[in-house]
Image (cartoon, rainbow, N blue to C red; front, side, top):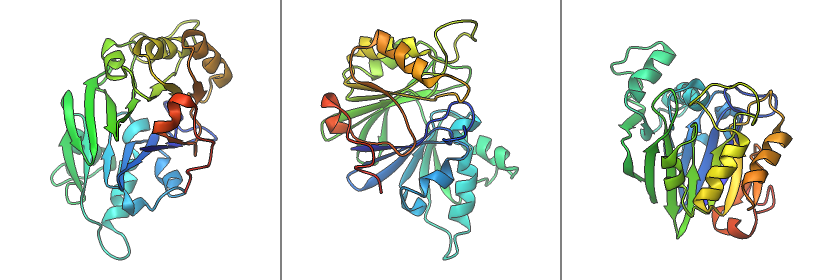
Length: 263
């Protein structure tokens, strides 16, 4: 199982990164975890965008789903004809939400291009993965996901504030891709996002193998976010970077060198 960071900027695209998008590949299957604004362009540096097999949307905030609208255009009006339908997994109302975002009628919306599958907590069938989703602590319905393949596991938090369900899903995971949106100081909204310290605390409580911090808001000091997370989690910890690629099975002993698995 290989993870490539397409975009890791939190809340809005930054000067060096699109919003949230992560490519997971295993067994010849290509899955996108989120497709936030700005991500579709960057995705094409790593893979043919028509070779994506499924899209998972953790929730329906723009920085996690808006480029599905652009992807609909690309798949619907491809020069050699419309591409086959692929599944898009997301919270209840995902099809209607994306149709409204593009300004089209909700019926049929984008259903000629995407097969929308609404998530519910528990196991979900996504290609070759053994997958499970759980509801997070966020102002809208939001999910975290755990993917298992070949005896290895990857857990992606999506957006969440402190949450016991996230700790359960991430228990003993090899790679924990966890949001860290706030500094551990000053005023901040409750029940929206994690601080660097809280991301580290969740990783420590869950006994994860490797922590990768993501959803990095452009105005934050990322070096400080990293130090805060490291103060709470003694294991390997790093900041997500666009283009960074990881072989998930190798992460208990350190990450694969940047670029080794890039396309």
